[in-house]
Length: 203
Length: 203
DNA sequence: TGACACATACCGACTGGTCTGTATTTTAGA
DNA sequence: TCTAAAATACAGACCAGTCGGTATGTGTCA
Image (cartoon, chains in turn purple, cyan, red, orange):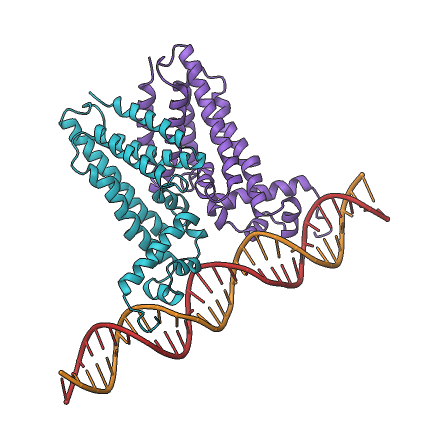
């Protein structure tokens, strides 16, 4: 089987990227091991260092090419054209919570939040690329609330930016505390309180 | 000065503990180095392994003997007998935010949250001892809200447990996002939104 | 044939942890 | 109260293992 080993650089790179995401997600960036990554991806150090300059570069690529797109798809896109953010956010939260509970994502929490907590004080480039995602998320939520106000679905005196910043923070915190408690009931509890907060923004 | 080097095990242990807290706070638990800890504490590996079984044991001790008491003093105690949690929480938050901004705590975030995010999925004993702190915090807030309801300072239809769980999560998330953004204005922004939420709980 | 895409062997640095030796303090017995 | 023994509190060299990273070789493809 050695000689038939096909060559597909795009594929190899992708496998390394995915394995790196898994490893960093489970063990953190500092705790993550390149050796385990290449083992998991069924390739070698040579391949890894051919495609990436080093561990940090690999980390940046994971943020840029795995976490960011995933996040955009799961959170930003569904809200992109919403004119009723309260209703839509509730739906998205419910979906996300169900999905996380179903496939055990509760154990390791939010990959964005995890990396951000660990790496942002240690490496400025990490912080900036992660912050990009947060900013995008906040802007998406804020824009949706601005449209919601125009559409009469949200009270006119709420500040979209303020509310968006708070919701993003609350969501991150909820994922974190639920992960630490290993208790999905806690996630549901905080979720209800968040929904109550949403309702307090209705006209 | 060698001969006058006095011996005080309590003191040595304490210095190691404090140095360990600093190291883990800055570099995380996995990224923290025992060598740096003993250097910082001006002692040696022998002393460290005499007082602690190993790195993990040292970590548990940091949680139990440094983080937990600090947390209790800063957050739980001031709320212990409050009958007006909305007013008192606002005051405590303001104090904490001011303090964190002043001494640069914004850079490294909340030590409890940091350790929890990193270690709770990796080590059950870590998770449990950290969860103890969260539970105590939630219970303190919930009890204060229960008293607040009785005192007529909080709406009667709010669920103390639900609200407490949400506030704790929100606070953790706010510290985390502010740390990642390295932006104290964001902390103030989310703080205002949190205060608005508090006000929505008034009768 | 030359550029690319790996594989493999290997490097020095550093890790958490152990071992042995020794100075200090506490305890026990006369 | 003086002293011997035992326990404690370190110090510092040292260990095997792992880390991220590199150098070199080899097969593949245009």
